[in-house]
Length: 247
Ligand code: PGA
Image (tube, rainbow, N blue to C red; front, side, top):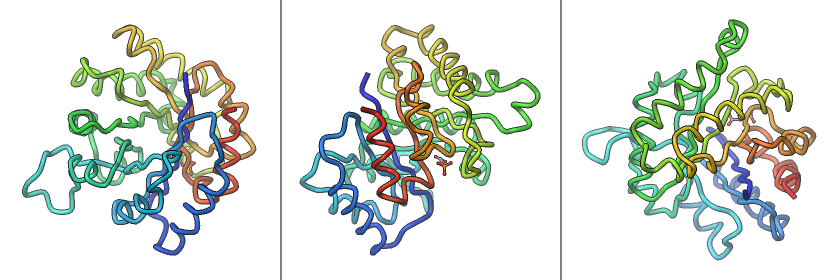
């Protein structure tokens, strides 16, 4: 299956920095062997849409989407609004949102539903904390997080993307080993496969300190279908190296 490399810029960037980064990406990308997306902060979606216009090589993604269709939800951004700016992917249930915004499995499942209803592919993040891993709960946690999404979106599973992001690996430089990642990816694949043959083909990305040096070995694992890249997505050269590692 065609891999996906998505950059999660988190709350970083400025008009000037975004322009420099996107121009460097477009200049260096050539004909990538994988799908490529960047997910800037919501405030910059219009700017980055403009910068990407004309080139189909990089898709636009958002970092979150509201679970509501519209109305009195101050500060939220709806799936339809994202769609107005050409957004193709939306990260949903990132651990930073689960942790700092208190997002629950059910909210995440509803966000997935809203994205799918609007033609946006949700990138559903799952992952265990260090304490959960040490207690042997890794597979239990990620299966629980994914099953909430699957229960509410059974008919549309083929249109989601999953990202396994161990919380202890995010932004820490402590990448999961390829074996650790593959083991969890295989468990998630089995869970999807049990739902339907179409769901077995869902792309499962790895995220958590994936970088230019370790991307190739991670991406060589049989059930790792791409990457969700944080820190390394802010440096054009590093992000391009990761994209190149898909070849
Ligand atoms: P990181 O972030 O690559 O900086 O660890 C990944 C993510 O949070 O999506």
